Length: 271
Image (cartoon, rainbow, N blue to C red; front, side, top):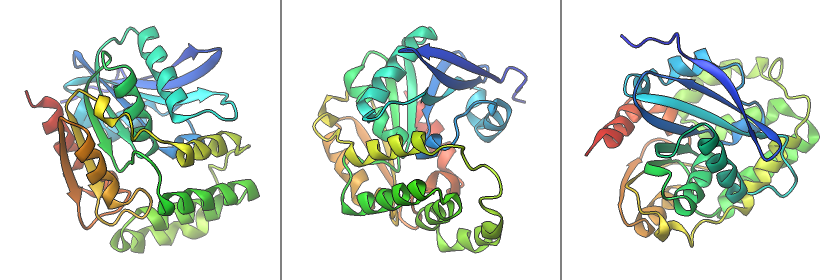
């Protein structure tokens, strides 16, 4: 049985700013998880117990760190800048070699991290992410930027859900729409806007060939944000990569696919 009593919240200083993280698990190896754009709305601060339960499959084998972006963010902050700060944070936390998993925007950052700091990343999982945004991605994120500037948190959440989940899942989720916006709305959308802008400007396509560690790439066949072909393009450029696409799922494949975490674990544990 996995013990969660050691799940805790933490904070590390990076470049004069604070970076929130949670850590849990009793394994000897380290697994770093980089969350998606939702981190722009709320960091992982205070969520140690919840995240430990959500990702309990990894806790037996790994010491798991889930790191937010730093606070505050500065205008023009890029996914490459984020990767640099994550590398600094890892070293401050005494992590000099780890397996890493990046989801959506977290995957964008992870591409830079693995390419620029190969000594830190032993294995890498890139889930529902992309090397460079295309028209579909720019339109989706551009609409979220517009809604955030209007302060329309409810419509932002609904549009994100509609673009991320399958129709089967949405039939249940839509029952919650009337209650969205009643809680969880950030006091200020600046953090989200800076991160969203970095997604639109992200470009690691020229760096993919520099990633030398083994990589598992997971995509959604019906992804309406990153798109299916983004996963294929990354697999073509990264020399030691494995590609799996959930053809019937979209951007939230990591939530909807029942075997997602087992698939990731199998890859991480493979010799």
